[in-house]
Amino acid sequence: MNPRIVPAFDGIPGTVYLVGAGPGAVDLITLRGLRILRAAHAVCYDSLVSPELLAEARPEAELFHVGKRGYCVGSTQQSHINELLVSLAKSGKVVCRLKGGDPFVFGRGGEEAEVLVNAGVPFEVVPGVTAALAAAAAARIPLTHRAAGQSVAFVTGHHDPDSPECTLDWHALGQMTAIVFYMAVRHIGKIAAKLCDNGLSLDTPAAVVEAATTPRERVIIAPVRDMATAIVAHGVEGPAVFVVGEPVAYRDRLMSLAVKATARANE
Ligand code: SAH
Image 1 (cartoon, rainbow, N blue to C red):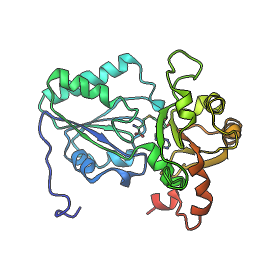
Image 2 (tube, rainbow, N blue to C red; image 1 turned 45 degrees about the horizontal axis):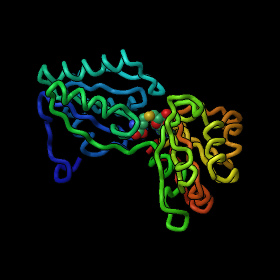
Image 3 (cartoon, rainbow, N blue to C red; image 1 turned 135 degrees about the vertical axis):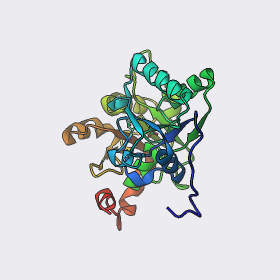
Image 4 (cartoon, rainbow, N blue to C red; image 1 turned 120 degrees about the vertical axis):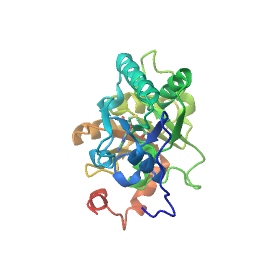
């Protein structure tokens, strides 16, 4: 890296760096994130973090795979991660906690930061490109567009909309210009129905973007009413985001001259 832009950085011993790895493509980590990853004595990483990125760690760095595919980390496992971060930092290491996307967007980064505060461990948060932004960019969906509306929401679709755990304000969501649901593959049918019961037109354009910025990237487009059927037909497995709203309609025009994720990954 050009030393003028990216001066040498060793990290501060005894510090945890909560680093966003970005959505998948290795070159979507920030320069600061990469510098910390290269400096770390210990790297604790999630499942969605690319193996190529881990190759950037020092050869002697300790690598800990923590976290599960789908981010359904149970409380026991999360407490294990918390203890690991604290004990590594207290032993004087530079610790890189590498999390998919952005550490503070649906990734338990806030909980981990609280644990570090309670344990008296200094930490820094390094933002990352969150899946919603990467998926929208890859699919050429301008999440805000002056002609389409004035709001965008990032929402978790993890809970069944009919379960008591789901506390979303469906009326408010029904009025949004664009909504990006994370962790929603299992509940897309019910989510679409709730939105349409709360003011959204059944014909509203929608997209599911799977494995954005990786060679597996796929974009499925359908009116919101048909998306549940469409993702079954395409065998969508995730990770994927569900984008709903008028901005999806801009994709058609913006797709000419598109460069594919696979082409970019092969560079
Ligand atoms: N902190 C992460 C989100 C973790 S929750 C971030 O900021 O992106 C995990 C969810 O993120 C997945 O269920 C999926 O909805 C979404 N996701 C992560 N990587 C993705 C990718 N490459 N393409 C599409 N969705 C992705």
